[in-house]
Length: 144
Image (cartoon, rainbow, N blue to C red; front, side, top):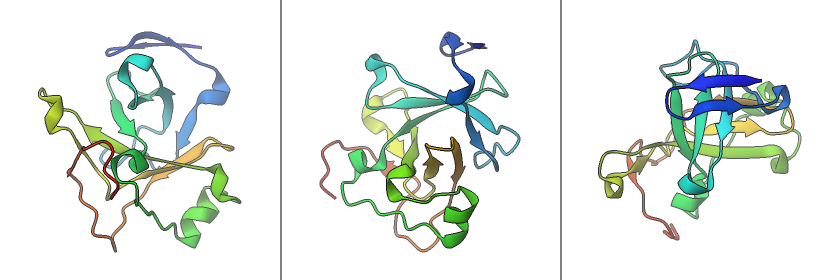
């Protein structure tokens, strides 16, 4: 399948690569279908591109690259709703804000995106009982 995007031009993807975020992203509940765009030029970032609106995409990154000790305790409801059976089935991503000066990039460690990569189902959760920040400065190699 093909998608014309504002940021990446024409993207080709397969149905099995479509990630279903049943509740959408915070503030974007109407957007439920996404693909992850990977490109060596933007590593370690990926882009979560909406299939419902070509203008909506989010830069995302593995939170452990930002904070090595990052812990995201999932509730039983989260495990059940995403049909997670094993920890190895889970991929965690956090949304980044990349301003004009990339040295001022921040990530939202408070609201990770949890993905069951076996089922291609995910949801963004809010870690209400954590000390993580929504605008954590990005410093690679931070042992945390």
